[in-house]
Length: 167
Image (cartoon, rainbow, N blue to C red; front, side, top):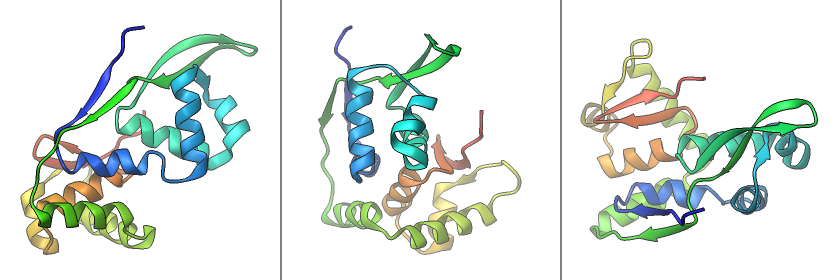
């Protein structure tokens, strides 16, 4: 397999990378996914509910690839890390750095509060422009990007924030 490199050029993307392995279970799962193909039932058996949530988060931030593999119960979807390496190449202001560190370490209850406020601004599954949300919440766009990158239920599409739709 060719070596693929995940290049981080945007300060907000650091939140995703830091949160990808911020617990022991997430760290072990990420290591397992980087060395072999693993199915969801195997992940749930070995890592439980937190492992499944971690897998969904890694999929949301586009760190995984999937393919059908033959398991003991027939064909099952297997997961593996898409990238072999990460290269961080960013430059930003101290304000941006402070926003990214804060978004990365924000307590889950605060993240949920922001998620709920953002979802309330949406009508159905229609996205809302980032600038509009940042202005209404009184936060910077960098901090907003950090919140969305960390969220399991929100995603950035172009200049809008949308809900993550279940497959």
